[in-house]
Amino acid sequence: MVRPPRQTLVPLFLPHQGCQRRCIYCNQSVIAGLGGEESFSNQIDRGLSGRTEPVEVALYSGNLFGLPADELLGLLRMLEPYQPVIGSIRISTKPVPLDERVVAIIQQAGVRTIELGMPSFNDGILAALDRGYTTAEFYTSYRYLERAGFTLGLQVMVGLPGETEADLESMRRHLSALQPSLLRIYPLVVLEGTRLHGIFRRGDFHPLDIDEAVRRAALLYVHALLEGVTVIRMGLSADEVLEQHIVAGPYHPSFGFLVKAYVFMNAVMSAWADLGQPPALTIKLNSSDIPHLIGYKRRHIEQFEELGVRLSWETGSLEKGCFVAESQAGRMGRCITDRL
Image 1 (cartoon, rainbow, N blue to C red):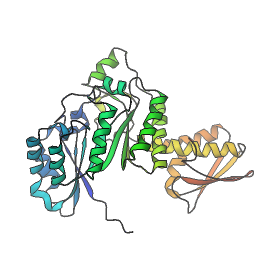
Image 2 (tube, helix red, strand yellow):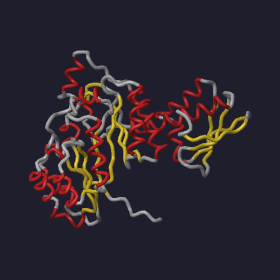
Image 3 (cartoon, rainbow, N blue to C red):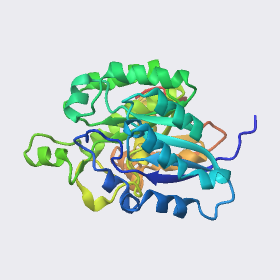
Image 4 (cartoon, rainbow, N blue to C red):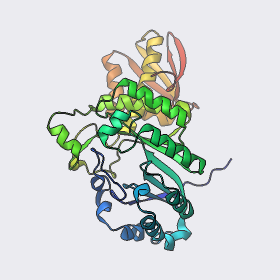
């Protein structure tokens, strides 16, 4: 089957619009960057003027389900002059409040994909974050939107206050039950101007270090791969957050790469161990996985050198994420989903 070409994404920001309460970690004006200070109409004109090929418009940073129907209708009508180049629309929103009229409005406007923020499936953590809904309420909205025919995605988080390994396991179970089409995984960072900033300054919250955040995100990433869920983002990208506003926490501009490299290294290390920890190891792999084998700033090469292992690699016609490890002791095929 020939897939249609991927549409260019045009992000438009509505910082905190429709948010009836603000989550303790949220400062959308920072996450939206300079676009958050620009009027919605100016963002539309700047992002869509002169376009000739179809694009996907993405509405971020607010809670469209929290907007009054008439106000939402007015915002979406501002896109109408550019309908000839708007191939589709996606929105990012909380799952509540769910209003049938609002759902009908976004359907008629051409919204095809909805990303729902669900940082945790622990109701105690959701309450502490001031999300304003429970797991049961989320499921009610999710199943309703699923029946309405939307493509659904989830935005989840790691490193939340009070989070345990049991919460990560719960997240994996819910991902299996929900089967979203898309997934974003974010580590919690402390942004200035948030309630979490105050909690952090009092010493009542300690964010994860980068290595632990990568490990936790990797658990969800591998599970998503096993479930056939497409992971479209891990971590805040450089254009989603102004680094000078981060007070603390595991922010890294290449967080997604760190996760993928961590997963690949774990698979290679397990193969090396199963081969008897030989002093020389050759990895045959897909060329796209060479950076994951090498690691960020050659970190993985250095780790093998510290172990006294001479590591080499060859490219071959293997699937991404799979490799063959060879040594004098034998050879072993493995994929990143085999172990973590």
